[in-house]
Image (cartoon, rainbow, N blue to C red):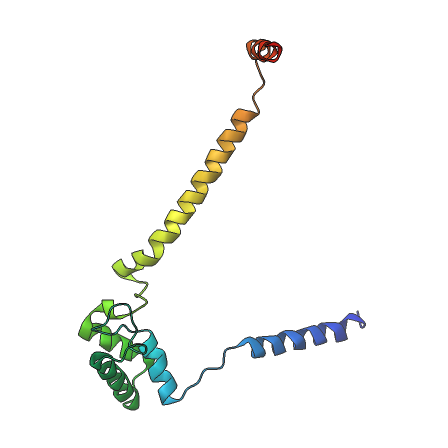
Length: 148
């Protein structure tokens, strides 16, 4: 038991070091927060671009709004909620996973599970059919075909 204790402690220390090293470093500067939120929000006038990627006036206005709200002490979630209230939830690049919008996340997962279950059932049936023994008539037919 005493021989394993130092190894267990060393293993625990190694796991703790790996956990600390694997934790992403979050830049809490104002510009980094503005950029992070702007990457999660659509540009109101552009198609398929985030507010961070767009140079349109509307995207610049969104970034200014984000910066102002952060300076007033709002959290990231509050800023995104205010933008969604103002422009609708379509401005969010990742829709909320609750209510009717939760279907966006649940339907593909459910479809995948049903498709996998259907394939499993089909393979099981095909295998069960393949394990049937040939009848005497089948053997006679195969023998005739070989001779011909």
